[in-house]
Image (cartoon, rainbow, N blue to C red; front, side, top):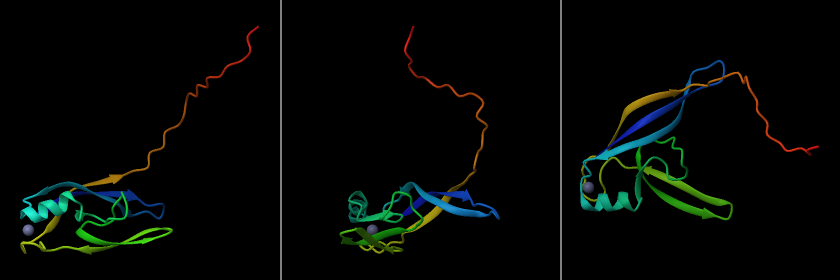
Length: 118
Ligand SMILES: [Zn+2]
């Protein structure tokens, strides 16, 4: 089984450089067995970290959730081989993009309001 992902990089504030902003799953191919397919459907195993929408993790993981009153904590565990059939589980970067800060001057401001007519 192989998961292909896109790496999204962001330009850092001066002195600059690039930092990973997100890893986005593009597709999972050649799912090795029925049980793995079920585990992916149920999100018992998934690409990226379990605890947030934006992922800074580019592995296939399963996770242990520890619920606390102030919120849940997830401990992710990388999977390199299918726990059901033993076949290899891989991830590969297919695409890489850099988010750039764009500044545009504001030239027109239109404000709508009501006022008492005469
Ligand atoms: Zn399998």
